[in-house]
Image (tube, rainbow, N blue to C red; front, side, top):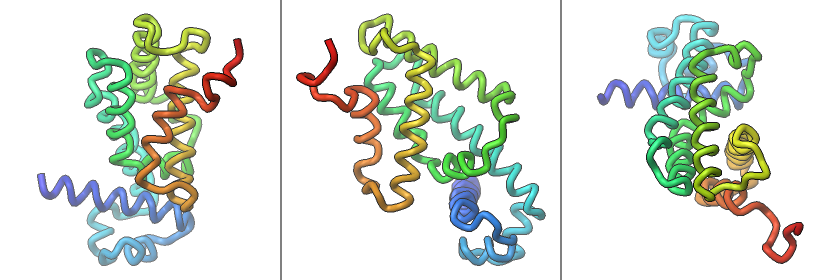
Amino acid sequence: MAEQETNEALQNALALALVEHPRASLQELACAVGVSKATLYRFCPTRESLLERLQNSSINAYKRAIENAQLDTVEPREGVRKLLENCYKNKELTLFTIQHWQPELLENSECTKAQEKLDAFFLRGQQSGQFRVDISAAAITECFHGLFFTMIEAERLGRVPRTRVLTIIELVLMEGVCTQSNSPS
C-alpha cells in the first residue's frame, strides 16, 4: 500500500509539474518534483509514456471518485459532497487532463460509463425533488465538471483559497448564485 501511495503522490506531483511546465523535459520534471532522473525513468522511461500513464491514471481516479461516492444509494446532497471530496483527492490529475485534453478521451468507454453514472445520480436527485428539473441531468453533470475544473484552476492560480474550493463549488451547484429574492419567477 505504501508503494501505491508513493506512486500516487509522484504522479500527482508530475501532473502538476506538467501543468506548470508543459514543455519540460524528463530531467526538468524530475528536478521539479524532487526525484532523481533514474527514479523518474523507472516510473516512466519516456515523456510519451508519462503522458499516457497520467491520462490513464486520471480516468481511473475519476472512476474511483464516482464509485467511492456511492451515488446509487447516498442521499443526493451528501452524494455531491462525497463526489467533490473524492475528485479533489486527485485534483492535479484533473488539472493535467484539462491541459492535455484530447477529443479521443470522450470515446473512452470508461469515461462514458462514469459520465452516465453522474447523469443517473443527478436524474435520481431530480426524481426525488432534490435537484432542479428545469435543467437536464446531463446539463447538471456538465455544470458539475465545469465548476470543479474552473475552481481547482482558480485555486492553483491563487484566486480562491484551498479551504473554500469545495464549499464554493457545492454552494454554487446546489444553491445557484442568485439570492432567493433575485430568482426569476
